[in-house]
Image 1 (cartoon, rainbow, N blue to C red):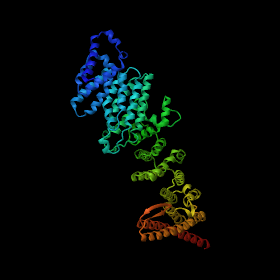
Image 2 (image 1 turned 180 degrees about the vertical axis):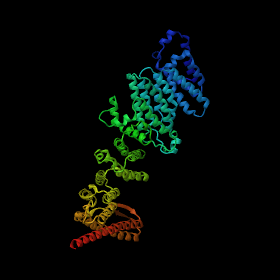
Image 3 (image 1 turned 30 degrees about the vertical axis):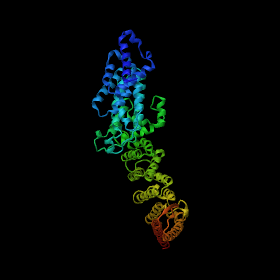
Image 4 (image 1 turned 90 degrees about the horizontal axis):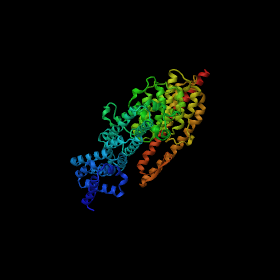
Length: 605
């Protein structure tokens, strides 16, 4: 059938309706009176009109008042063809004007229930950059359609927001300032448009104070959307520097609006984050308890970051809350952020922790806080950032924040944390960092006010974890060189600063144990390691003469196919490390001998 025949058939059908245009006939001519082929015919005819550019004829038919019944029941089938045509003709302004007029008419005249489902299907179809194009095109019509619905408005709003969020979550979140400004995938534009889409429904909740069941359901749907938005895109979103104007950051503006929505519908952020994790739930419906288990932790962590680091709505925070209390309830959120592997997320954990610690005076964070699980798991999370993150700036940030955390703890808290990290870090560099901190605390205790945690029996208990080789003489000295050097330097410091007569640290009464557990095994291990690497050097030199490549064992790991010249550099570097350890060890033993000899002479005298 040709286009002309299709249009003629369609027009004849409409003319028949016009001819029998009595009120009684129109009342019975509803959707059930149309046959299935009528819908297909109407859509096919309308689509051919759109494809061939006969928009004016289609507009004339749709605008005819006498055709409102057929348009109401069948017109929603034309929305898809109109939208697809709009996307194809992005640069033809005249055609687009007619298309928009046609779309507006369909939204105005068609059955809103059918139109809602049709619009949501269109929103779900695209992928890639077309996602934002479709969303920006259909948000206003979608809003109008929902507002026309008389029943189940909350369900319709929830369905629409869920569909929109699902599509937005597929778009990549811009990371840098340049990406935010370019907005290649349109996420920032969509976030701004989505706020305008949601505002009328938030206002509807505010204006209807009678707490009807429908109003409560609508409030819950908006709450779900806000929680989802806090997780995506806001959890991974990077924000422009605070020195720059906030209005230039579309994602920060989106975050501000989302937090504003929460407050408007009765969920101000203090109520949200202060109640999160408590046994008493703040939600009125079971599904929110399920939501809490699945993704609410991420949403609340994101909210805490936005408030405390970005300063959004922080004026709502009660001024009476102490810095240590704020840190306590934020620790759970920090833990959630640090557990994530995305750099854009765990970096927020670093920022949130730093923000909380900077509010607290040094040495004032009570050791009792370490009885709370997160106060020990968070520094362990910092260790993972320091050792596993591929970005140097974040590794350094993790180190700086861990040092800040140590500085804020009281002496017993520091002591407890040191024991924990020495037992769990399994990283020579981190252990060296902790040992250096132990040395600093001993120095403060000896020079200023003595405290029992870094002198006497408590210190000896801590030194038992430090002045020891994990596997005795068999310990991999190269892999543990940082820890061993830090331990030797600590021991040298103790020998110099604490006289055997005073024995403030308890070192001298434990000297025999230290020699047996640390110094003697270290001597043996050095001799074995040096002999091994000298043999490897000899072997590498022989290989170099034959100009072959061979494997090399360094730190108990085989490095295959290394050129002989590189092998020699690695082996000589290892020997240099052993020589360095040996020289410090010799100096420590010399100091011990001098001190003990001097004390013996004094006793004899």
